[in-house]
Image (cartoon, rainbow, N blue to C red):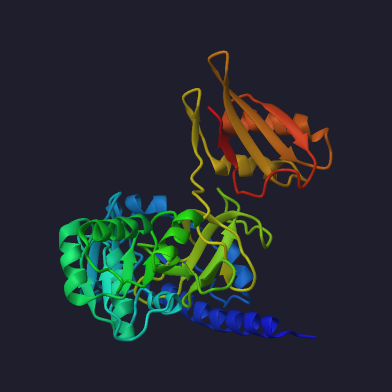
Amino acid sequence: MMTDTDQDRDARAAGQLDRLNAQLARMRATQPLWADLPATPLESLADLARLPVLRKSDLTQMQAGNAPFGGLTGGPVAGLRRLFVSPGPIFDPEGRGHDWWGSAAALRAAGVHPGDVILNTFSYHLTPAAFIFEAGAEALGCPVIPAGPGNTADQMVAITQYRPRVYVGVPDFLKIILDKADEAGVDRSCLQVGMVTGAALPDSLRAELAARGVAVRQCYGTADLGIVAYEDGGPGMMLNDGVIVEIVRPGTGDPVPDGEVGEIVVTRLSAEYPLLRFATGDMSATVGTGRIKGWMGRADQAAKVKGMFVRPEQVAAIGRAVPGCQRLRLEISRSGEQDRMHLLAEHPDPSAAAALADKLAEITRLKGSVEVVAPGSLPNDGRVIADLR
């Protein structure tokens, strides 16, 4: 018998599949970069795994060769609203339209109401974070104080005069603002809701902020994608409308089983900036229907061994070359002033060690030891390369 959860999942998937196929057809027709996309519609969201991954690290080279956005936008620059320069440099567009970045849902889930005054402490200089939340605030009917980061004396003046109910920014700066207000005798009791992202939110800090009167929720997003997921009181984070998220094995485009930690790959359903299987370099895992655990570290695990880089995609290639492999982890250490590599591989047959050692040397051009371990014994943390030096 189909449950409500099954129905919700199927309805969401069907709607996203329709939007995805419409976007693929539009990309194929209007963007030379995507002319080779499949001419027939995808039959399921799982078919996305057949398409290539676009890595964030590729954007700099693509944009240098085809300014300004590497051929990834769905229309002319004149049709965009804002043009950003993020560190890298990576050039990000903002399109026109209602809540273009998708932050309204995150703000609403955090407890933001129409008319609430928002203290926005993200930077308004060349990068999009402040504007991501500005757009959501406008969609909800909330006035915004464009405070930016730092300048705590002026923040105190703004709090006193405008009495904002909502803080938007990184969690650490919210604590600084509360500390400065208490030191200066400023009444900051108006601040009751925090929408935070861009830095870790330890449980201890969340508890401290709550004890001081500010209920904090966090969201996950990037300058390229907008808001991908947000806390709503359920387990982990709810995936935002307008994005399709896959969790893949780092260094590959291969989806991992539900609940296993891997790299976040996002397809953004946007006419102006339709990113297809965009690998963020961030780690997470699914947790129920339409939800992820949130940010769980970086997938960029490249390490230099004896002067040569070893990358997650090489470890993945070793696993593919030896049938029966499950999780692999390459541990790098120092012994006798020498770099050492030790490959741990989940495999049901201990004799696979010899073939794995051959492939390790062939693919990395470096020798290392191999240990075959029982399937399911390696940690489910997404770590493919562990640099222990």
